[in-house]
Image 1 (spheres, rainbow, N blue to C red):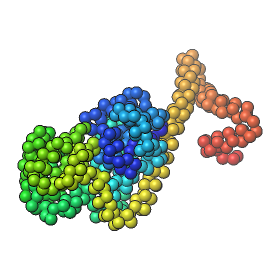
Image 2 (cartoon, rainbow, N blue to C red):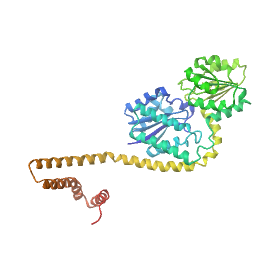
Image 3 (spheres, one colour):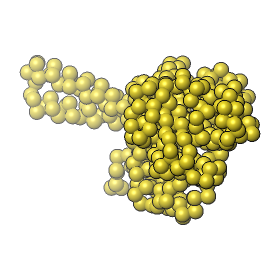
Length: 416
């Protein structure tokens, strides 16, 4: 039973790398089946967000799993290897606890990552790749995260990515009230950001999504309009602020589309935030004179300014995590004894059945029941103690002393 976590995150890799190893929802089940089907891991769960891609696994071949991450995405290993971390056993446990508690997030103390970890566990369970070890890890992880958030102020005064996006927009435009905003995508992240922008009462709001019905649902909440994603080329020029977060594996807003929009706007500025990994907006768009393009990494710089109040709670949170890591690893170590205990029990069961069969035959012959019971109990004791006694007698004096000490401990023997 070997627990490992490997992957990349916003600490180790830029968005240009993270987007190349991300797992969109539509390929996640296939990826889980692939990494376990090739016997690289007994169990596996994949956490893939805009800030991290991590594989939690029960494996004897951790290096093979980390190599698989690049191979699955058809990338040369040398392109990914410098950014990868591989964490064994207690380090993997500590990392999972810290991630779920918001201590490893770009926004210290943010809560969204906990929901994303729960979703990763559910997806692994549905794919049939969540076994005893990972199930126990995730359940303990969620419990620790709850304890950290309840016992500390790690989530107090949280500065979110959504709030950071609004803050940046207000640096470009004097007032959000005078701006038209286009949200591309209709998922959880877009809804979160849209709620923050809607509070500023912009003059126009539109949601564009591949599934128009989902766009309409969010637009109704915001008091805005809905559109299909394929209408984007005709719509883009009408909006001052563009926020995008889809699960598309390829950019949906390219340089040509942006250039046409800027020309139609007569060079009025456009503020764009790309919250997707892989990115929704081509990097070259940010080079246009009248476009201000920000990625999740850019927003990270903004939110760091709001961390001071939460940093005071980090020490307390780390202490809670350390205690729980010790307890979890004690459970893992205990599970390592299970095969031995099972073998011991099977050995004893065979002896019991043998003596029981002998007793049954004796009773069938008409032997005295009391004598049969006495013989059975004596035979069972002799069989159980024969091998330990023989091993103890054959051992050297030094071995005998060690064995005697272990036997006394195992059987709670007292000096007579």
